Image (cartoon, rainbow, N blue to C red; front, side, top):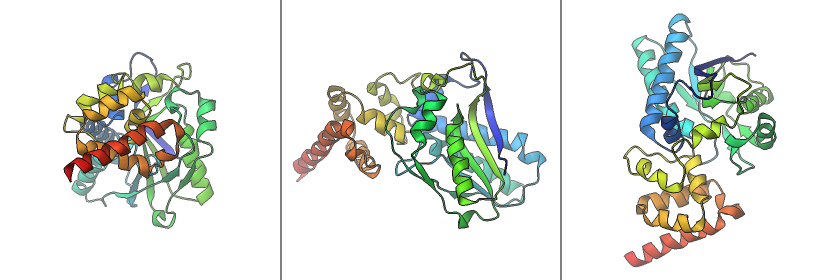
Length: 278
């Protein structure tokens, strides 16, 4: 089984990406309007460059990047990718998309984007990925991710594929792919934080009406200094605060020491708010 790799943007220059770096940064921190733009563009590219010229009659299954309880930014992009692809498939009398999830058990909290290829593989090497093998039988699998930098995540997915004995035709789809090995992998962090420099830079995204929670934004908020965290939380809606807390618990962040002070403040903040409402 040799997967077919498709990427919409090939990154060969550290100063030119084929997409707006600020857009990418907002996307990684929950801007669904950018997720829609990226997902739609990726679908259009895949249709034009592959599906139009290749008759794929099998059921297509789209699988977003692995996650535990809180989806990644890619999950939001996946939604719009599927919407665009389904329109084309239905208009061309083909079967519409099914979806599957890779369940992930995460063993680290470090910021992945700053690391070298070797360190990335070491970091995620202890994570475990799980998928419903029987559901995938005789289907074509489209593994979706926003960007490929070193291929570490792809290696882990292909390791899972091998362990499960999957014989499916497989496509690895990326919005962007680093193809110049002389560019350090920390270019990913340059993109991730291009517009987001402090937790307060999140406010325009959160209040835009197009905000979607993801793993990155939850970890980023929980990891900021306590004083900034207090000010930030007090500026947010009750719905945001409660969602942040519930997602944090769902991903077991309350078991990570470095998040405890902020999470305890969050818990007490919610309790005090609810008490005042009684």
